[in-house]
Length: 228
Image (cartoon, rainbow, N blue to C red; front, side):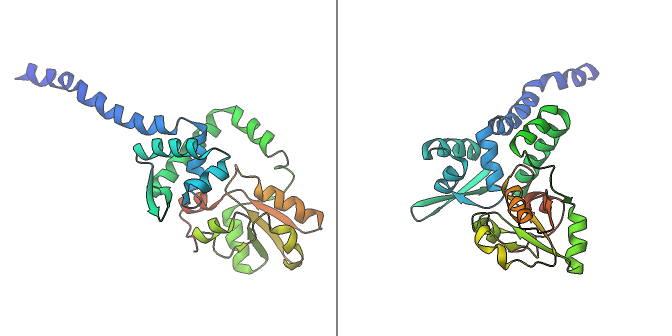
């Protein structure tokens, strides 16, 4: 009997490897830069194939193929809206997985920091503010918070107290913003340049500015509520 029990775990080797093979479906689906960008976009708001193709600068056919791969791995879900198909993340766990993957890459790969500097070449020129500092200042009323993402993303969920000023609309709304408070801008997180572009325009007008590096995905994963 004892020998049979000892042999039993080795007899289950095939089943164990099958478990690991199932997990590789998720890893393989994420092992593509275009699909990671699609997940990053869907962490902001659900979108149609057409909208994702436009945001990611890909063809409709290519975007659809990548989305089907993510769908087979159960990372995204789709639903039909008339002639359009809208995609969304399958669960908040998918957003957390993306942020964890990103965090490991930042910690283990020195190249990430260099690549980020090349992409956001002015990111060190502006003051940054933490979520905790932001919440304290919002409570005291000494800050104006701008969400410079597209309006649809703001409507899907935004940091409480934020004003929607899409980056393309900012030049026409500069004079409408309060002059006696610090202006804090945020966008899709640390891999988005919209907030940097907003701060450049505001700083040229002599405004006191700062950036919140975190976006709504990071804000929510940290346990803070979103407004809709």
